Image 1: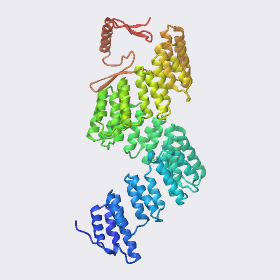
Image 2: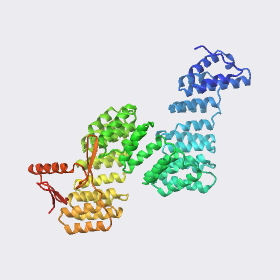
Image 3: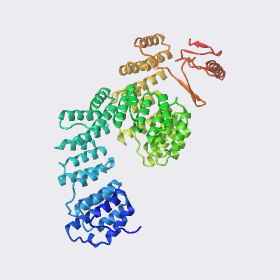
Length: 625
């Protein structure tokens, strides 16, 4: 390409053209022409110097924005004079391209050069790149520089500091900066409300919003309300969420796409799926986010079939499918969903080239393992190029789900050897695996490692797994002792685990204790009555069993019907106890009778402890005597 002559009477037009269009070739040609013009290196007056500096900075910006930082450094070194814009361009160029070290290197050089050009733009630019937990110390260093240079009273700098601290998962420091600010605007308040919500300090976020409203100096904006809805979703605070919805309606924000998606998410997570669906139906325009939210809502509310039907309609209507949507539909798969449909989604993933997306591949691993195809889960895991911690967790959970504790533990060892730090979800799957095969000692080791080595606080899900593990091993007294020594309040999961173990081993005394505790936690629980009745049945205590069932009926508690399923010809067939609704009922019961007869001939003796009726050798239903 020929060199371009630079017209010094109006240089901005030519240089701006190359910047606006990010035209690297044109910009490079201008650079070459400038190098031949001595006026740019030795300006004769202030006007020429000002114009020259503008062109130098414009070229510098072009190289930085195009990611051509090597040429940017060469140009910077050639410049006869530099100003604050020059330094800021170099610093922002490196930090925005992910090279934090070199960006800080230029910041250090700026300070050491004696040039008094460091301004609030420099500081906010650097802080915009400090958005990961591992960069929290760098944020602290910049905070010190802010205080040293006297910019701590600038609102824009304070806002950038708050945002950086929260993104670095240091909410305490972010809140401290906020508390020390003498002047705040809506961005300041929103940064903290949002930061607290993203850090899962939902209550603090709502309290601060109330303080913002009572302060009266600043009015919340759209982003403030979005953050507030995130907190309501996290707390499952339906009342507060409805109040926010009312305010948004008055302000006329309810039709905003982001607000609609946040409202759907809030209502669905609060269990109010009906209102989430109303918002979805009334939306004038739908985007990928709102569709993903409603699919996830169906999954969370146990409406797998409806989620699949909506996804099919989305595909047929030609709406753009994105990886998040695929991830949401994959989350609906469980033991009763169609493997055939899952394979169709897998084909769609390959066709749309989403297979490299970690959320999609992790969803596929879970889908196949939940549908009983552990081999396919293993294949996808092995073919996944860049595995993140969720990939490892998904595969460990798959092995645990299929009772393959040996491979789950081996995979955990491989994961740690490759330098991947386990999460609380990792240990939850490992405890499940140990529970199912009776590895009590190993399971207790994992619990100790989680607390002492990785400094994680176990959740009730972890403790319920440990109780289940001890219970399955017949260590009921140890399980009770563990529960009594917990610092957290035992919830329904923990008491159900203990009661289930008592049911398996037929311990009426411990079972009565666990059932009473479970009913105190959830009075409407059918499991407490059914499992306790089973314990009494196993010990022949029919009067106690009758009293338990009578009490259950008096409390108006109904037992949830158990469902079995099988997929034949891409169609899922579901059955309940004594089911007579299936069109092939007679044939099914004939086959069951035959199978039962063969089983008895092979020496099978039915366990009648928990059964109210069974098939005799003639295939007829017979009460348990």
